[in-house]
Length: 494
Image (cartoon, rainbow, N blue to C red):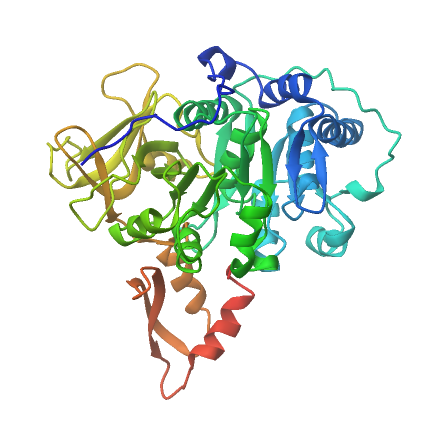
């Protein structure tokens, strides 16, 4: 098996390495450096609208000043209720510029979930726009102030706020599925996010000439990675809403936008590859950066059949709590010996360990729990000290590194190449989202006709993992799938 570690075909010499000292600043300081370098270049392209770096910075500054005038410059949690667009990115940057912490809300998820996130995160204010103003009012119930970006004074200050920002300050709280039946918040520092950008930049050679997809909601850590890895390198970020525009239109959009880096969960790539014909599609595309689900040899067959020789397929392992920890490069000549494609070799400043049930490292070709040792792990979960104690461990070797226990299973070859083999604990990965089984079981048990329930993941013939619930009804009650789907619609994300 061959693998290209870090070698990426580039059409020119535009790539500039992300140096280590650049993580010792704030995210917005790095962004403002890109604005100075690339003021007239396109930062965000939605197809219909093109936003230059200069204009994106002005939008972010006006939002930052609105926050500073409303709340001062001490850090607080600010909720973002916006669709993926240049306005959302400007709001995110504005929150960070004003020394605050952003908490993304997804307008498409059930209202109860967003209300929980608002309350749990202790967000003091909601940023929204005209499109979602009514929802923001309903969520806040009059208890949280709202800033409507569409109503901001266009003559407001466009200068960069002179706020002192530390790389140790928190950047976001992103909520993922929780084992208690409620979402749990993962917190992250600006330094750690910059280090993840460093890893992706230097491994994938992201540069100002690139045009990168944004296919996920900003409520996913992978979306923050994609947005920052793009905008902190002077490249162009291209949002595409799969929910609104449909997967069937993705191929034509990739061509029209001349995308160079497609970053997507595996099921999205799989759909794309099965709907195109011939070879040599997407001539500008140089990288397919896939993850979130297991990549199979069938997926690589699709890549090698339908994509050009200058395009590389990169499998990865990335976790909200750790950032990207492993990469595996595949080209048209790569030959695979098994059905499962490796996730590759340890990323910069990261050690992937495999541990047995006693916490001891296992040898080559032995299955163990994947643990990640690094200085750049998430500080932990928001307001969950007991979970932090069990998931984040101090390094027995001492020093400033910690170890995160992922709950995933893996195996390493003799040369250190990692294969991901599924989940040890009660998690299932569905289309790139890690779902805690207990969260679904808890909600189903709230239904008056259900006595017992067991939820599990089952592989569909398409290659996707699908969630299945086995139920025991109360007495003679009859419950059908349609009834349960309606019941869950207002309780869990679709």
